[in-house]
Image 1 (cartoon, rainbow, N blue to C red):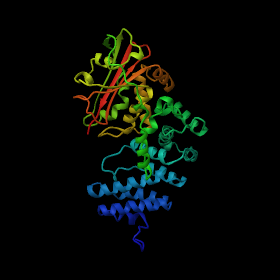
Image 2 (image 1 turned 90 degrees about the vertical axis):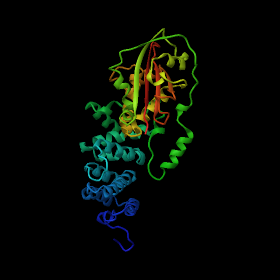
Image 3 (image 1 turned 180 degrees about the horizontal axis):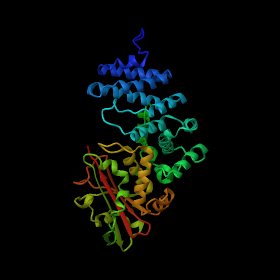
Image 4 (image 1 turned 30 degrees about the horizontal axis):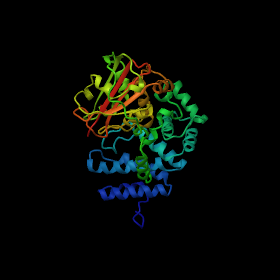
Length: 395
């Protein structure tokens, strides 16, 4: 240790991890190194934490995990090329010992991309992409990072370097290859669901909650409507696509979901859509409830909650991150509005703009009446079919 007690080397920082107070001190040292631009030392510390951690010592492993997480956060949020390059190097090194719960590499890369999307500018991304253009091992991280930037409201459509990456992804059949490099109007709520990090995160979160998502500004639907006959459609092939966005919820301890499609006779006009139609459908999620909380909304009011569920996860499950959460939300929305499998985002968007939507909650035995409740009804453009997705998760 130095004369002031400050750890001068990664080994000295690791030596502090004998108790919780030492872990707190080590995290403070990590922050100090980040402020001083000691990125190589942070990279060395992250590597040493993994190699020197004893997985059999559960208590000490937990302290190693806290400090290793903090190293990764500080590198991702460091606003220099050197910090980004250090994180890219760390991303290639497996992390299996210094974690209490195993983390698939895909989940780790999504976490890095999320923090990079929050902490770095688009130009920093593009410069890093240029530096790593001959490093295919980084392609997945850059693919996720690119869409994290888009989801925070920055268009990359006019950036040749981003377009080249997107074209490469598309030609290789990568899952993210079909996502656009700018938000569509249907996605305009997505930035309000993006996670915040670092010292400024809390203040920005409060501002976002104060302004509220656009989906809260809805039109009360009619409670009564014409008589309609609803017949369950053959939706077995469609259901997995409808459920794509809420799959993290159904992977939790108490999550469940319902996805059904019905044909209607006679057809229903979008302006007549209301709670009466929900009550006419044989649904498990609403069948045993007396009260329905229903709102009419546009496609953006449906995409936002779908994206939140997919990207952020449920009570006991991790989400897919921004990029793959975006993909899952478009997949579910496409199935709801009747788009064929594999339809492009713009084709789904066009169908969604011609559809009518209800969002609903039904306090009762099926829903948990908590934050992780979602109910969507989509009346398709012809007015002759309707799709319903309901999901809930609870801790």
